[in-house]
Image 1 (tube, rainbow, N blue to C red):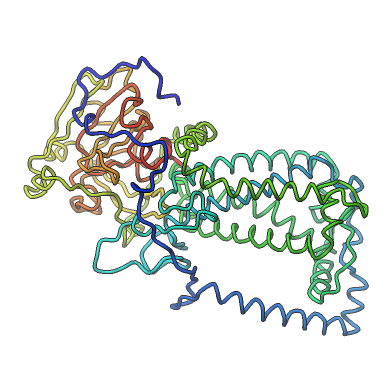
Image 2 (image 1 turned 60 degrees about the vertical axis):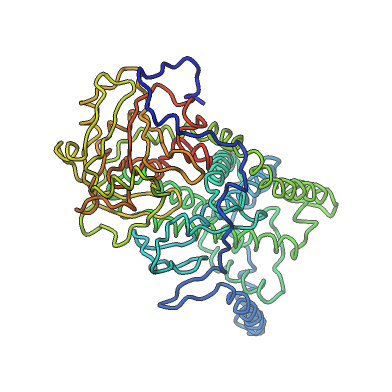
Length: 581
């Protein structure tokens, strides 16, 4: 990693809290991890009632039987029979593709399937950390429309971390509760490979005649699709001519998947980023994170349905012919493609089975590979100076609590005295080390901002923050030229023991909306949300905004802090050091 270089100068006087930072294991240690917590069968809210998705099974079975009966009845009508005869399923004006299925298409078809399945699997793991979806900007309990967790309990403190659930290790990656740090490395890294594969696919598609197979060129595709649907539903399948032309239903479903669902998945994923959303102003406000999470999930549902339907049709419409087309590149009655199909499925099954055990055993390696693959992209997004602010009417009625609160005699004494004895130490590679009381911080020029908090777990909330700008702090302490990072130390320990801390690039400290906040929604910051002082850095995810700040140290590198990954969650939970996305 760029920040683990030897020979970086130490600050002249090191922060004493360095000594209470702890190293971390490179494996995921089950005895140090959160206890399992099963979720519930997914539920969808219809009006004021929650309905289990399991009802979809008998409803779908009954609907399928009714559809078959309806389609067979329709085909007995002379008008429908004439319609099918006139529109046999393939738009007759559609051009023919005479190059079959070339090798590059076969390869990309497999890679696309492979990447997509692991993207979906890791995505489910991420969703399991906040297993609720909303349409509005806020994440107020009870406003969700989809969940696979019980309602938020009342009468007790229930953090976002408490809300996370366990997935089976064969389904999620790695399946354990609150392992979204590792799941994100899988999700983003495979997404990058999927994106590169998709770009190559687009280039090759439109530089050959293969695009004509997927893009409708005549309005006749719609009656052809209806005719095809009736024929499939009646169990009297249309003639397969997919070697040269897809039927109307195939063409529309492929077109939506390749040219609509895929771009929507990418864009809605990016719009969940604090750096991107906060840099886009009104666009980020309209296409808010929670709406984008919901649309992202619906695109996942589309891909899942497409994969299942596609797989079923491969088998029922002729396994040998279909595998010959896509795995053998031939249009005959041989068995050339079937062994290659079996080999591809074997690769998928083996990697699927090994993914979770490998991730648990080599968690730090997964983190490092992920950082090497997508860390540079995170770095690009981190350069954006967030400037998106909202209004008082946008403030969320509920702001999820999170984090391990301070549990020390020192903090209890500060709290009992209303933080009168609090001192913020700022040192390290600075010309003018300082200590500030809370009163002195409040006497500095005050900055207020109404911004959106993006938690790595998926929830978000809008609040008004008041405090002192980090730009002002920098003017007072004057960081040295070699100071590249600011380390924020908390008064609280992390969940696995040892002091909580996090590291920011010094460029983040120059952003207009980076402040040390002592107020939230016009009132003094409460204990749950970080009293007496917390960081707000609006181009990063929430875990980097250290609460209960004890000290700030400016350093040249962070390889010698904790486990050297750039923060407590980076050390212990394998998060990414750069998290603007």
